[in-house]
Every structure is written in structure tokens, then in C-alpha cells.
Length: 107
Image 1 (cartoon, helix red, strand yellow):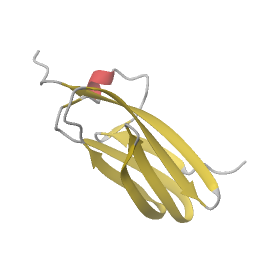
Image 2 (cartoon, rainbow, N blue to C red):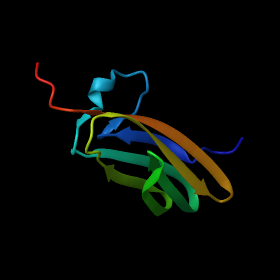
Image 3 (cartoon, rainbow, N blue to C red):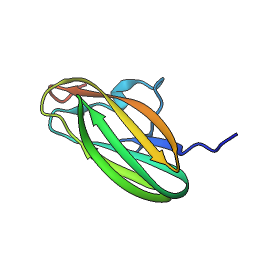
Image 4 (spheres, rainbow, N blue to C red):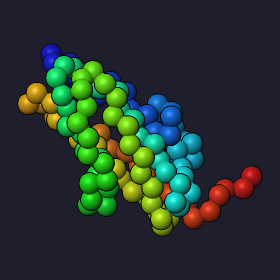
């Protein structure tokens, strides 16, 4: 069995878990999401973060290493960010739900 390239995904400095309350990860319009991937393997990996049909971050990372990117959106809504890691002929993809609120939640 081959080893996974993506060891851990963090969103806003918290380990990403799709089953966690999404309120934990939400941001207000204009405030950045911080996306981090802890990568394993050897050599180099090309990492791309895409949302709304556009590549928002593209970096080459020495393995093992960390991919880090901050993205923000100026309008409220839900975006799906697709992150693709390519290294040594292998490819892995992870999808993140990015919720952007119109204003700060009070409560």
C-alpha cells in the first residue's frame, strides 16, 4: 500500500473535520481563511488550491513539508475549495467547505 501524500488538513489553525460544526471555520467577508496541508513523502510536490473556477494559490513544496495559503472572499456565500497535490506521479485531492458570512455573528 502506498503512503498518503496528505497527512493532515488544517483550516484556520484547526484540524479540518467535515463533521465538526461549520461555525468553527466560518469567516466574515474580506477576512482570510488560512489553509494548511501537512504533506509526507520525498522530493517536491506541486499544490494548487482552486475555488470558483480559479486557482487562488499554487506552490511547490519540498517534502515532507507544509503548504500554507490564505484566501479571502469579498461576498458572502459557500465555496468549495479543491486542493490538489501532485508528487512523484501520484495525485491526491481534498475538498474544503468555506463559509463566508455577511457580518460578524453576535451572541
